[in-house]
Image (tube, rainbow, N blue to C red; front, side, top):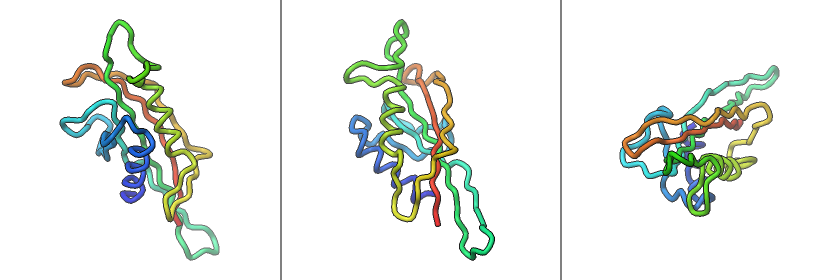
Length: 144
């Protein structure tokens, strides 16, 4: 799982240029590293399902990763869902991250998202920097 998450971290940072190094491996969606710059992305391990198929000696694993996107609300009168040039909204960021890893498979893994792409609605939470919008989705890969 960690190898998959580290490869995802590199790919998202490279493909979504305005994030820079703001792609983090996180233990919980409510725990971002101190000093985190926004917008940012958090990658959290999801369920791992080990599959044994009849007649096969080899085990396959299905690994799911939860992806959390975060942006700061810069103006409470006009909460930015879609963003403006130079300042992505939560939907812009989520779409860019999804596109950067959709159908992508690092060595040893196969992208397998046919039945998994759970997306939560946008939520808002208070942080030291102000109010932060969060949207998440889940993607699945197979190893073996």
